[in-house]
Image (tube, rainbow, N blue to C red; front, side):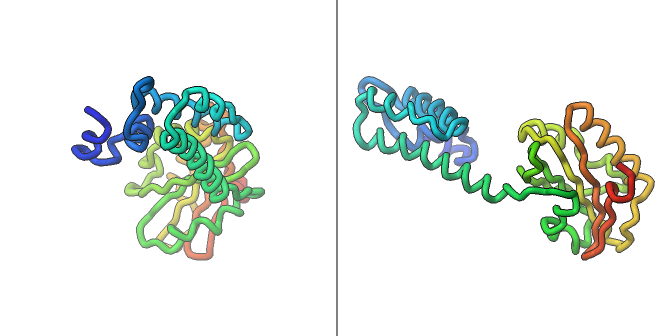
Length: 216
């Protein structure tokens, strides 16, 4: 099924990046079909994102003798990807010098009436890479998906992780289950080279830090 037909039938979210590029380019040339052009653009994009100073794709595109509109689209896609990368890095480039520096980012759960958790993934310079929110629907923290945490951490090449969850009751002291689950998570992360910097329990402006209490 062609990308255009697939998008109409299954929705735009059904397309992968390669198919999305094909959809944007729309058509090829007598020498290169749209899928070949999409492949060239895709791999040039990966190289350009990995090395911002890499502009070898420009010479490569020029040698392909493409129509101006296709050349412009392909160059534009790579520039767009680079700008998006800059925006994302800017949004998540906060450096966490100490675990409690994460507290300004936990407002979505600090006043919540439902028990929620947030995972913050940091790089080896302790810069914030991403964050993830989970619902804690069971008294034990084992309920949250450790498999998902590990997958995200490895995908992001994260070196450090901070877990924050709220206690809607207002009592910020950790339960026995909180302590056991935190130790389990810390050991699992340590086995793959990721350090759990802290587990922080919050309620409004109050917080309890496992790190500060010597529980990590």
